[in-house]
Image (cartoon, rainbow, N blue to C red; front, side):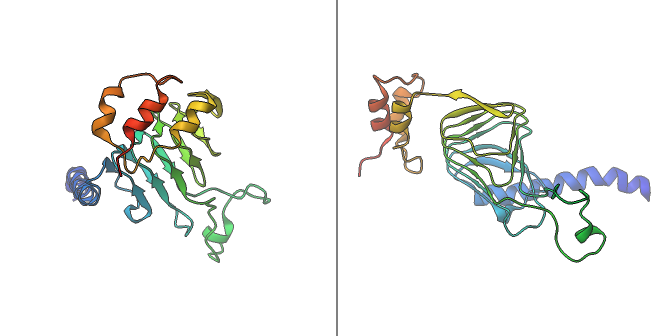
Length: 210
């Protein structure tokens, strides 16, 4: 019986994962994401065009949530940790109220995770609860993010290295509505590096006519 379960278990897990992904894909035809078996689908929202595998760890707090914007790039092995932190200011790190006394839920959540539009998250990054990844920022591979990252910043390890563009270009890029991008017009600029000379034309190309 034990051997039978050991043989069947991998197939059952694969079947359940496929069913879960089918349900996720049906509700997320506007993007290119998949979701891990343990991720709470009801707590996760993803915008248009975003791609990658979503692996979110939840712990039951009412504050938990994951909101991902439009046209984000999520590399492999990225973990979104929605809660589960401990109160290290007590005499003991151990969650006695929950696991020993059974008096209350004890894991700490600092709020939902927000990933704004056009964010690129590198391989193996860990994003902790309450964090906002600003529009257009880059999170380096293996980074641990415990604080907000400003728009268009490049973050690696545990700090901001630099910004992708100067403030003038960033100000113009912040005018783009990624929920309503003119994909067809942007094609001719899609492989061009942005400069102060072409930023106005690029922003204009991405704007849909009203």
